[in-house]
Image (cartoon, rainbow, N blue to C red):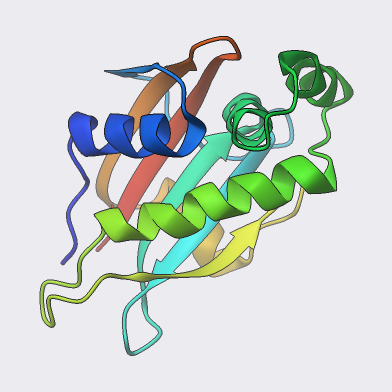
Length: 161
C-alpha cells in the first residue's frame, strides 16, 4: 500500500515547481468535491491500473498553483475563483502539478512510482468509484497550502483500502 507523503516533500514539490515560497499545515476539514466545493481530483494507479491514491485540490489551490506555475498574475487566479471556473490554461498547469505529484507515491509491491491516471476538473461529476474512495475508508490527510503572492488553498490525499 502506498503511503501519504510527509509535509516536507509536498512543500518542496510545490516550491520547486512554482518558484514561490509555500507554507503547509494539516487541516481538519476534508477536501472532498461537493456541489458547493469544486475540486480538481487526480487518481493515481499502479502497474495493474488499480487506483492506489487520490489527490483533491480545491478550486482555490488549483487556480493559484496553476497561475503561479504559468506566471499568470494572481488576479487571474482570483478571477477563476470568483467565477467558480478553472480556465483551460490554469487547468493544464495544475494537471502538470498533479502529474509531477506522482513522484511522491510509490507502489510498495514493486517499488515503482504510481502514475497519474485521470484528472477530473472542478465541477465535473466524479465516477462512482472515485467519489466513494474520496469519501470512504482509507488513510487520508488534508492540508492547507499558502503560495506566496497567490494565496491559500486546500489539498487532500487519500490512500483507499
